[in-house]
Image 1: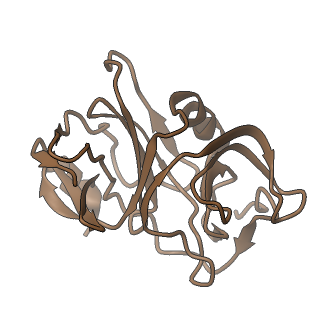
Image 2: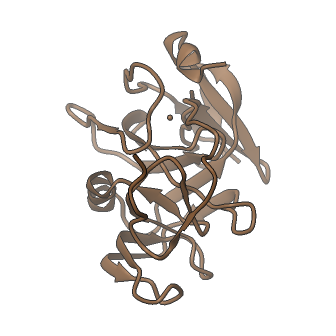
Length: 213
């Protein structure tokens, strides 16, 4: 089912990871941006079951806005609108089924983009990951010489968020790759310690109050 229909109906997606409740709201062939990207058969087209955030244990989280995006988010496409959104905590979510990353501030979705993910051999892991390092001009020390602009580290074994050429038919070695312009905005919005929730989702009603564990 086209998850954009779910969005139009005011639905978002829900996933449980290690006892943590995560909400997810209902996304030619250039060369890869770096050696860190592997060429492979075209992945499943981007669905639009876009993720949403989790709050601390016993602290309810209410989804206050989902960006009004028409149709599925295509590879290379991104959206950003933080006008009049109040200051507050940032939560980043990545839905592996949807292949979409969303950014929430104070319960408002302010950004969404289609992303590159890992392969079966080198998958993008599920879980909750704090950002532990940020480097605007990072060059991979695993894939020698591979630029990873606006890098935000999630794991010690090389899983990061970073800028990339995002095109149908390419994937990462487990990282979450996003268009460079979007990566720059995300980089300037987050801080070390902010959480990134990498999930798969189920449906839940828009506007629900949820409690994370």
